[in-house]
Image (cartoon, rainbow, N blue to C red; front, side):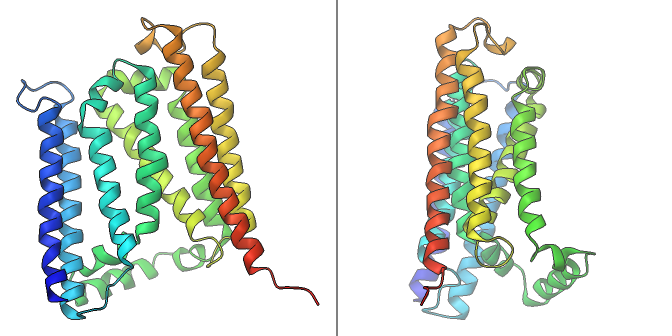
Length: 292
């Protein structure tokens, strides 16, 4: 099993290579552009995350050979999420997103409906903590537990509804034409848009996938997923059926580009939320005690 621990640096090297390849494909040798710093920031965050995760996983496997700190499929989910993030933010998709509204919508779907759920189910925080020495982990745990209201909030439904509300607000705000155009015209604003979308989506999906454990019942998870899905469908319909360009950044494109973006927001997104609702409903019925 020690050989499995040795695989962590290999995974790290593969992920590092994939990030570098994505950058080269996107034209890494070209002169620096205004948004170049945001690419460097994304690369740094992803590489540091892979390094910390790989070291934490290697330490856990070396300490307890044969005993994985999390299920292997969760480890695969983490590296899958890193790959999707690199694909969405460091490949030609990111450049095409500045030109075509539909590609930009697809980029957001990759971040919110693929990368975020994968990170939510990966339990990556348990591995990241292994990166720290035991004394530092204990100090960190004590510091978090002493934050006023933290322990209570972690077991109360209000935390789940706050996560849901944050996603609804962030998603709605960034699709207001003025906010959308502002983000596209300011590289750091665009980076902030993606950061807030990913963080709120991870928090939302974390509440959904952990429903039934502590703070959220499967029935409430169904309601939350349905509400977010309805918001996406409503916004997608507005975008699809608009008779004029809604966003100045894509005003020169055909209305078909805008209509396609709306359809992508409405149908695939609604399908994901519908499937998550069915999954939560199935868990609720499975845990329901039989009568008689």
